Length: 312
Image 1 (cartoon, rainbow, N blue to C red):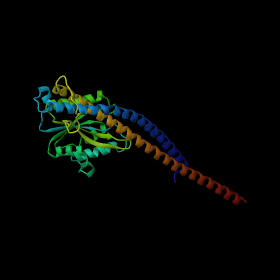
Image 2: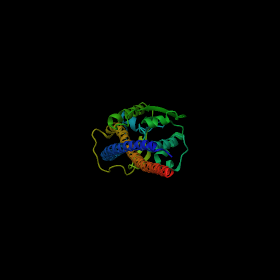
Image 3: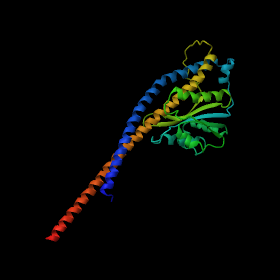
Image 4: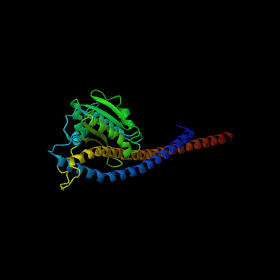
């Protein structure tokens, strides 16, 4: 059985750890609130942007396109896919990174597919691209994903850029370098599809891995247009050629915001669990310390009584 001194030192360490985890929980809760507010502000913009792109694509359907629009809208044979994987830079956020990394490993063939991954349309479509032997390049926003995959990607896969500190402070300034590289690669013909793989924030307890094809995207799908007569000036093709790069930048920013909210939600939950577990361990070791103290007192009393009896 541990001595009273050992239990006292252990209790001090547990109490210090509990203070740290409680402080980290409060910090994560504050960051989560700001991240949620940022996501809420972007949702109306994303909805209207999707409708506007749908209207523009419907307006130019069947028309002869100018060169600046044709480079975006002319159909291509998919030979190369660019993927941006969003994870966190730091740990202590539960299964936030591990769940997404395992799912992405199934997509690129490192792990076998499972029923959960097969039920997510984006991952199935991306896996079909890889199964066809199409070359893919993975760019990383977040150190955890980079560390996990830089030595594992092989075959038709390539390790792309790692954007350090991009996920630490999600902003347009940090999203722009990622988006601009993808845009340059598409315009230069080095890639034919742009994908993002990230955790979609649902609640502090739930983050769902998702794969989204950023471009070309299915904005012209039935039911997404506004069905309102719109007069465009300059012509729709010119507006569309200017709007598509902005939409790519915005979707990269949106992925950063979703990633930040999910990370802070997962960290808040993990630190809350750690704080509760710490308190349980403190209670358990306090009981052990009290028992050890009581046993020591009982032993001393027995020794005193035995000594008195022997003198008598």
